[in-house]
Length: 345
Image 1 (cartoon, helix red, strand yellow):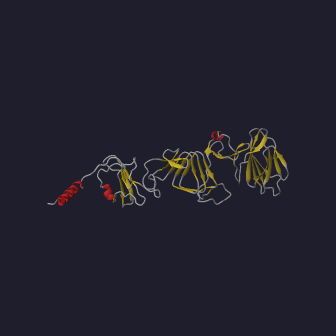
Image 2: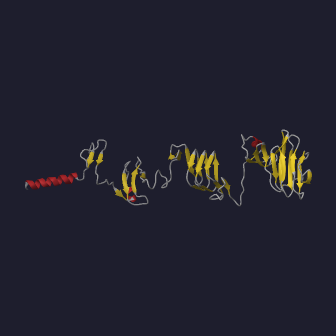
Image 3: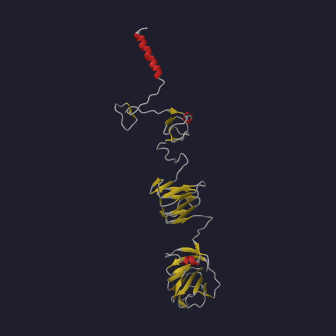
């Protein structure tokens, strides 16, 4: 056997032996680069080519036995193809999909969220100061300070607690509850998709339900701190009814077509007259002429008076509250305090 043949046989045998062996490399390995980066175990460098990780189907990926933590593959099929890595440090794999920025982020929109999502200013954050929660019934809860700008829509029951501000058009479908301070920039409509009256700041629309102001006792009403003129409440005891706060205090709100069991009935005066009422109710009936002016004179402290105008024209009444008109088939209420008659409603 020639020396050349023996050399070739030795090389072939060496290749056959080493082809099934694994080599261990210490230090940094560079591919496409002469001197690899010292901080990298493997430094792959190219300006014309990329690095291709193992590609496999979903079934092949899940069939990997005891995958190492951090193992990376590219899945070629399924509903979410792409890069997957194993986050588990045990023999049981926990494969996580690496989504792109265009389709998902932090399990929002592609899976069930596993941690709370909070608001820090205008940013969603796990370390925020306000929280958003949605339960199985579709109820939305927002806590802390929140701002909603632009058009927004909420379907289902929702609860907002804390300070909130809404600018632009907003629509809420279902039952909504707000606790804390809230502000709306622009018009607010309840019961409709859009306001029908541009001059209204608040519009409540319904053909089957009414508007219910806050209901409270007289004691609770009197405990309101610094009520503003025009404030409305419903008093549930001690002469129940709708009350408004006026410049002279709380007063009941009168309504049209008022009929009272009167202590005094007469035709409406045709000339100016001063009345010092000793009764609680005065009813003026139609006199078929032009009405004069009624001036309220003296009374007793705390005395209350109801003047009912059953005349076909308006009736002018002068009190310490000023000169006012009582429309036809309407009534007005007065109270005598501090030596003068004052109109309540």
